Length: 332
Image 1 (cartoon, rainbow, N blue to C red):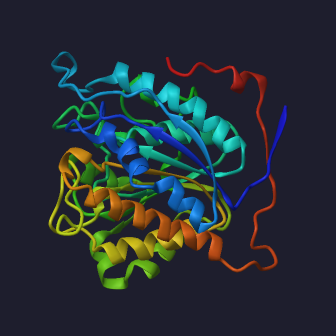
Image 2 (cartoon, helix red, strand yellow):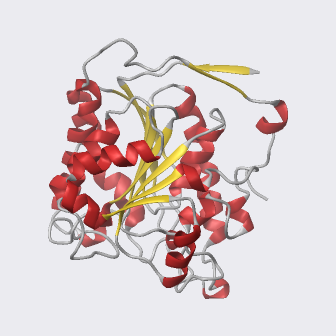
């Protein structure tokens, strides 16, 4: 059956994905509630958005899971993604920009699965200081947070590689890593042979966030294809945003992140955004939550400020979903 999706540029579909099951520490499961508590929804509404709140998925919690040291907490992660997938499908179908408040980075698999229900071809901008290209065979930690991109491109645990029922969720040439700074040796070796593109943190610092973001949009062919965006908040230097599990002193300045996000957010082919790794347990006074809400509201507001011009708005997107595709199992 044909599904006609009419994009709604003034609407945001909000989903909370309170998970730390894939993470390196507990606490990120509290992020959606913390961001709501400091007024994210009200601030977006004041900026001019209609916010459709799809609520929060059930919490999925961090555990050591020493019985599965190569891929920890897979059962909990898959259960959470099944919950998110259902909400993401409804949100994508509505035509609104989908904003997922994570938790851990694995929530991108849930958003991508919802997007792929209606869009055959989608690209991925991974705004993160880490490549997340480890697999259960190469991981030093067993934490899925360090393996998400690998699973998106079809490498890793079968439970996640086949979560959508069709692998890969995104092809390697359609992934761009943006803000890259930390690589494990197996990741570096893989990336040296992969068609995946990347823009290092140093390149962003030398060129500026706006120019580097435009390069990133060119790499994912954003003018021709829809794309989704992942923001791992540990890409921000610890001096300005320490409330993350694995902070780093050499991250990007907040103004560089803001400039890049503004370019990404205002692009007409952005379908959705996952915000990950903010940890309220490391933010005793709540200042990190306020900074993150300020960042999101300011950058998403640029989407509303983009002047209308002929062809500036995307044509209504129509995609064919076969009966066999719509009946695929959520995981195998």
